[in-house]
Length: 138
Image (cartoon, rainbow, N blue to C red; front, side, top):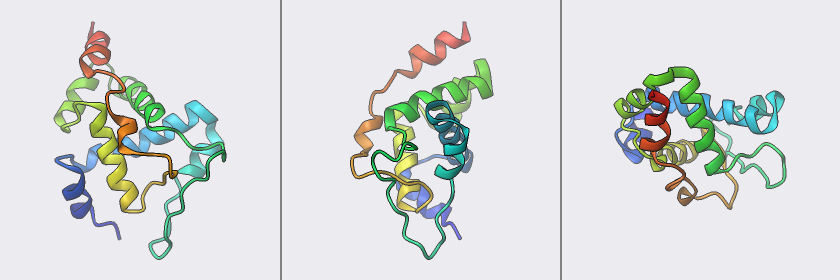
C-alpha cells in the first residue's frame, strides 16, 4: 500500500491530483519520445516487496527530467487548455522544480524509476511558467 501522506511530506504541498497528473504526463511524454508500447512498460509499478530497479541507460524507454518537463507542459496544455496554468498553480506547481520534487518523491516511494544519472537538478529552470502558460492563454 502506498503511503501518500509520507510522500507528500517529503515532496511538499502538492495534492494527490498533482501526483496523478505527473504519472499521466510521464505516460504522455514516453509515448511522445519513444512510442506507445514503451510507455506502458515504463509505467508498470514495482511490487511492494520488490526493490525498484533503475531503468538501464540505453534501454530506449527512459526520458530525462528535461524531456519530462516539456512533456508535462504539452500534456497540461492538451488536458486543460488555457486553464493549465491555473490548474497547476492550484496544485502549488509553479516551476519545473516542482515537477522534480514530485517525481523524486515518487521514485523514493518506488512508484517511478530513474537512472543513476538522473538528479533533481535536471528539473531546475527548464522553462518559465509565465512564458509558456501565459502565452497559451492569449
